[in-house]
Image: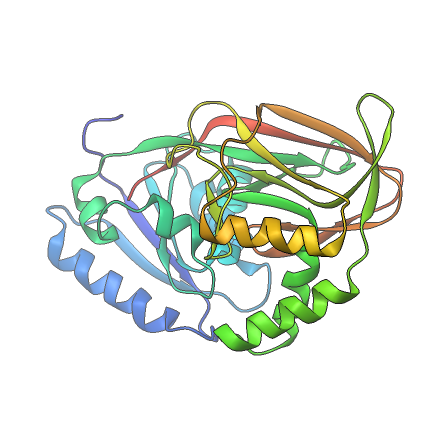
Amino acid sequence: MDSARTFESIVIIFNPNSTGDAPELAQQLHDRLKELLSYQPEIILQPTEHAGHAVDLAREAAGRGGDVLVVSVSGDGGYNEVVNGVMQAGNPRAVCAVRAAGNANDHSRIMATKPLEEAIAEGHVHNIDLLRIHTGQKENEPLEYAHSYIGFGLTPVVATELEKGSKGALTEMVTVIQTFSKFEPFGIRTADGKRRKFDSLVFANINEMAKYATLSEAANHPSDGKFEVITFPHMPKWRVLLTALKATTQGLGDQPSMSKYEFTTLKPLPYQMDGEVKSVEANVKVTVECAPRALATLG
């Protein structure tokens, strides 16, 4: 841990059209920092203009060099974009943080120890692991990072359906049940050459996801160089429901930890990174690995 860090600039990135109250929260953070900080950094409010814009804004902010703090006022998906932008910039003095303002705020809910403006004023920076995924990118294409989890199978399918509808507890539950009833398992070829069929395959950097489910007994601050692998091998749907129920009531208990997991897709496959849905083509070797202590953060 560094002694108290100060920043030359603090860039606050938010979506002005978010369904939550991101613009208001961003302005509040800006004003509180002006009051609280004992020094005077440049504090910039940076609204996004389109999907994916936060990646570019964060990369530009961190890429200017020096002691910069890039704050995402968003849910998990918006923070994922900011983390990826900062990682692409390659500035070792850049720090990331999130102020929760979205539907799923798993990362902030689990990791935050105090109000963000207080954490920034104290300036105690620590490093956490990230998940890094390789899905056949060319050499000049950036790899993708996740701060919390990467999920294949049921996870992204449900997420896609939730994005189509309005978000409310009852609506979410109905959507999950409808999606689940139509869900088909997926097959992959694992590193040992065997074909396996899964309902869900999740790589988790935190011990909870989707506001409800406790995935593992892992520690809250991920900096051990490993991630948890939570597998739902293909099983009758009633058994999947029972397992999901267990996750929401008592947790799934200890899960295997790994620093790397490889497999090959057999068909095109959607996946979810921190709430953002992506997809990988058929016959692609996928590598998920831990990027140890890759992200400097506070909060």
